[in-house]
Length: 249
Image (cartoon, rainbow, N blue to C red; front, side):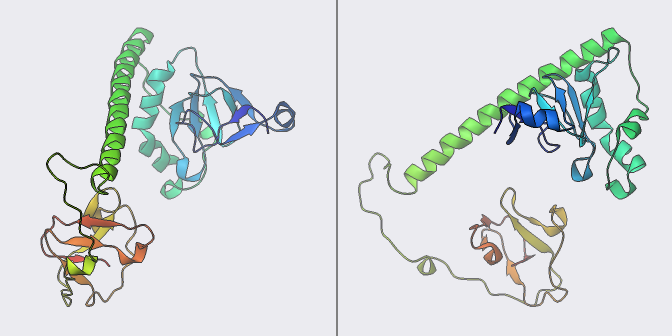
């Protein structure tokens, strides 16, 4: 195993890689060296059109295009390409599927302001990116602290001042009643997600794989807890805030 980072097309936004090359392996491959600050552009399938300023010095293969120019600042070009990504993808790839190439990307028509204006735009966008990154780091830190507090409070390891009585251990079935209301075909289909809780299936990024006959699907009401029994190993559950909608079990 070597120590030269090998950047795959799904890793262009990251600060580290999973795979590494040795100098011997590097000499035998068709990979190319990229430096921190180079603009990387993914060419293949689902990642086609993704671009990022590299945070890694390493190697890439033909799945990634490395772009550098003396007349365009990467900190200007990267957000520009991201902004118009769908426009380019829809023009050059049928249905957004397939692979791009260096020739195709080279034919992109872009609008470039004078160099001083590029610099000013790049400075403003970089400042915003840095502010967002700091806020994201703070949110992640707070989430970790919250998770630790939840573990302490909900397991009884940490008790609040003034509370000393032992916790009672009971089966969940003693606390809840399962709602078994069916035959509500007129109600909308819902989905239980791990990130957004209970949402409309039409708002979900996943395709609808429900049955055509939804007469056996159960209704869920506000303040009900929905538990996705098809993903028991994940323990996916959420509190519903939606009125009288059909719960996709």
